[in-house]
Image (tube, rainbow, N blue to C red; front, side, top):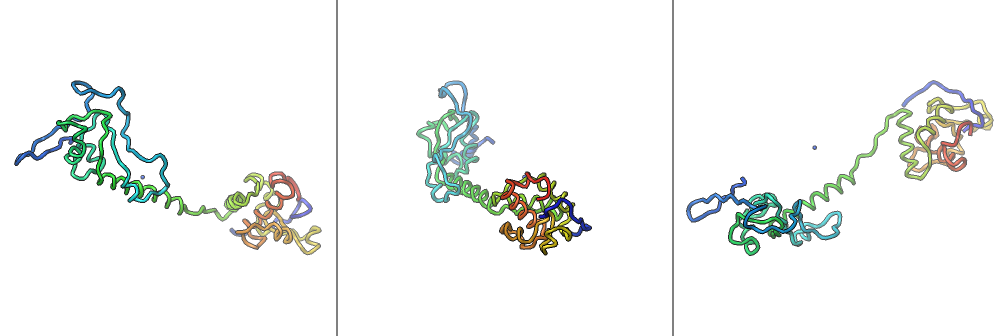
Length: 260
């Protein structure tokens, strides 16, 4: 970085039915399974749940083994409009509504067509295993997607170099803003990453200011940021080193408004 505000500005280079049938002897009987009623002879609880609920532990790990999940008691709370056939289909109950009824006959009563809101039904081992597999698969997919998040890509121009530098600076706790960097780049080099000052005192001492933010080699080496190129002409390396230096001396590149 130069001790003066003017520098040569070389020419720029690079860069998403309800009818169920039950077997009765040799004939098939259509059961309407009228399901959860809201009026009539069946007594309802004072308040019917608004939505179905699946019993789960209070806290679950991000990815729960299917075997462990399958061992958990899985129940379903009946809501208005439900039928045994609908519940069995929605929750993959092996054997359909007949198995669901057989497993819960003591709670339902003699008529499988009548189930009241709020009734708790056991869904069976097959349903538990299916729910466990679905839960585990969803969790694994979410974790995998987060783990393989594609790396950001940056344009090979001043905008891209500044944005890449800002991301690197953020990982290293180096302050600075897009506007602060851009303002100083335009003053120091007019956006030319190959700019060099061959006339000031630094040049006379054999260490000319170079690159987008006109950094001399000793300063570049002292404030070089790991993960960037060891080349003071490299635009991203030049910006991050200069911002690291400015942070140490001025608090931030945003505080630099002249030769530094």
